[in-house]
Length: 145
Ligand code: CA2
Image (cartoon, rainbow, N blue to C red; front, side, top):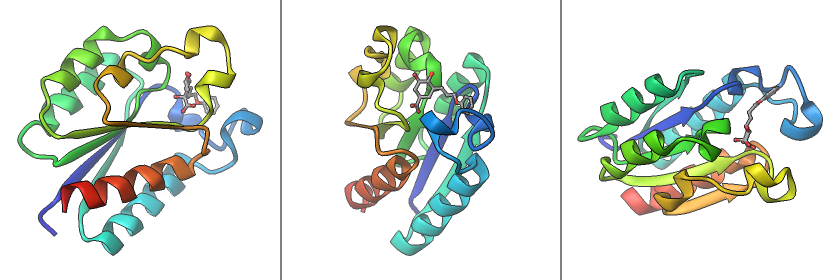
């Protein structure tokens, strides 16, 4: 198990399962972390699951992935729509990037339709609910093998 995938979650995602279940469902971030770890075990790679409410910390996590992680799965939360700095950090990372959104951002307010991170991501998964993390992991599992 020498392959490693970072799974980075942005602001407010620590509240998953506690508020707005009509948009984000009732599964908690801890439950998503457990499922991702199990899938990683099945597919034969390690996962490191993180969440931060702070843009700079997310940038630091992406920097930390350089030279260590074979892939990054990122749900940047609302920073998707605002952060050129996160895009720049991802552009300085040389592994595979997959962007995940739990909700279908294209069915929501117009300001959510654009994601800076999508300019860097190899794939964007949105609207599959929390299953999007599993889809991303399975894709990455094949890509990094
Ligand atoms: O659909 C997604 O995964 C989003 O990245 C979630 C972000 C939102 O700003 C993006 O436009 C789309 C918001 C995450 C907030 O999560 C909450 C979960 C439960 C209660 C409140 C917020």
